[in-house]
Length: 67
Image 1 (tube, rainbow, N blue to C red):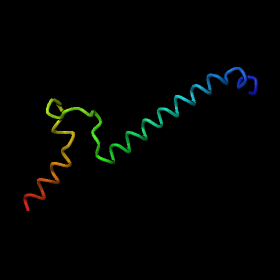
Image 2 (image 1 turned 60 degrees about the horizontal axis):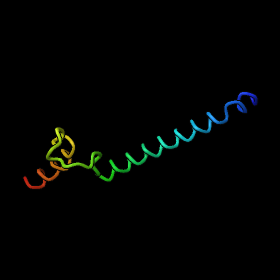
Image 3 (image 1 turned 180 degrees about the vertical axis):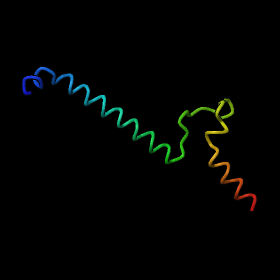
Image 4 (image 1 turned 120 degrees about the vertical axis):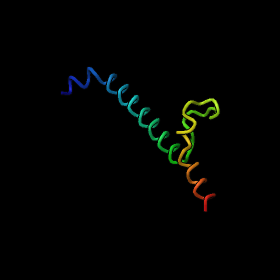
């Protein structure tokens, strides 16, 4: 076991680094989603999914105006 670790320590280190970067990216995406930030950062008028992206916010505004 120690022999295998000594032969592959570089690969293990690189894999751990990549896994850490992926974890940080996922955490960042989750925080942005909870904060209501858009994932694309572009103009919604030119987006094919503009109606789906912000639909929750629109329905809350519509319910508030209907009362």
